[in-house]
Image (cartoon, rainbow over all chains, first blue to last red; front, side, top):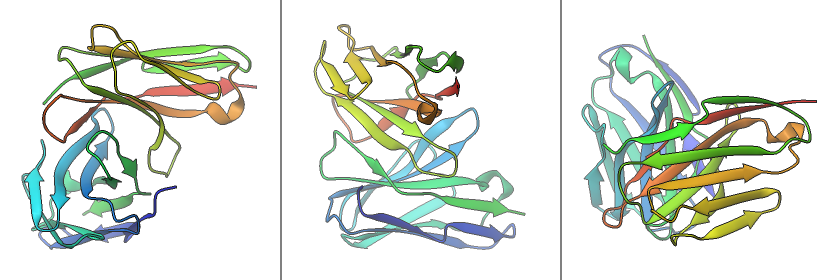
Length: 111
Length: 111
């Protein structure tokens, strides 16, 4: 299994508060991704990174920002959490663009 | 974003039966991936396909990259109870880093 951890694994927060989710990898892979998973929508890409300090937006990036200051860490920040951001968030990594390995996920509830 | 149509949405089968599911797109993809997800966990990569017409096996699982490059198929032979889960397809265009996911096929195996 790819060495990916996500923290926290569960979080409950209130509307309007900032939230940061962390993805940590031990594989030294170049590419890192953040997805959200919602019923009826499958997995949708929020942001991805193709190297340290190199990031790009995915299809559902509004309300989210990311940072990657080290190869092993990719942070996802909800600048001001809303109830529509209640979801399960998955990080994925890959050493080449043609594949991805997923972490265990973070369940976020925004009240 | 790209729409991937995955069917069927759900399947209820008897243990020992074979299973077939597919994924179609209006776009031509260069890569197809198949994942399995169990409750509370992240998707696990089952099979990766990189060439039109390619047929790849992983134990009882066989996946094919459709010749039109707009579809892919996953077959599971002689299903067992531990095959239960949600199976996702994912496709990647020739350019760009993003993968697009289907909405999943939920498989239930009745002992």
